[in-house]
Amino acid sequence: MAPARIVKEGMHMFNQRTANLVLAVIILILPILVFSLVALGKGMSITNTLTALSEQLVSRRHNPIISSLLGFFPFMLMLIILWVHRRFGGSQTLNLRLMLGGAIPIILVLLWANFEFWPTFLPDRSSPGFPHGLELLIGPVFFAPVALLAGMLIVRIAWGKSK
Image 1 (cartoon, rainbow, N blue to C red):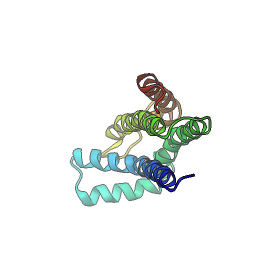
Image 2: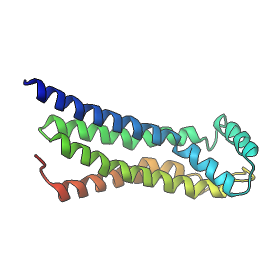
Image 3: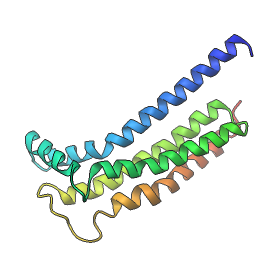
Image 4: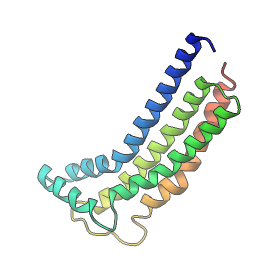
């Protein structure tokens, strides 16, 4: 393998790995950011928001970290699909596009689920009743994988086989 090709492949792998790491961090902090934005938007002070967030992070119910961890399910599914695509001869360029096509729907579904729940929960932090809270489970576990596959399919159709 020529040295220029090794460097080029290494740069693509670095970009793919960096993008995966950035997406993982976004998924991890997204519920915490939405919680904070909603709390501040509901008129809570910064200290009350931080206090509520710290109490919620150790809570057994409606914990933002659990929502983040559930968001890793579609992320891991995306990584498996990308790995299989690359193993069976898919190009690195198309792999990066597929990753973007899958990552954007995952983030949008997670945003929707969190913005759907936290405004009903804050500022008094009382559980709003039975159907509320399920969006934090249903969004990442059921809707995000479907959105991921739809996004990847759109990218695959739009760009086809990239050289």
